[in-house]
Image (tube, rainbow, N blue to C red; front, side, top):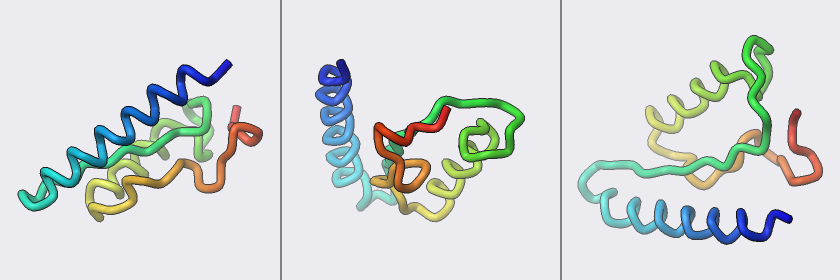
Length: 81
């Protein structure tokens, strides 16, 4: 069921990695984070859009963490609803 999505995401990951390799010498950080959750506004939990926005801001500000999954340790069996 998820095979097609996996192929597309692997292409996206490769594209982001190549962009980062090309643009890093110019001071441009390219990152992608896979989200293993369904967003729920107003919860204050890891699936709250405001919390996700803070995570993305930290990736931007610290210029690291482009290969991480969010939230940490998520697997298809533990996707947060």
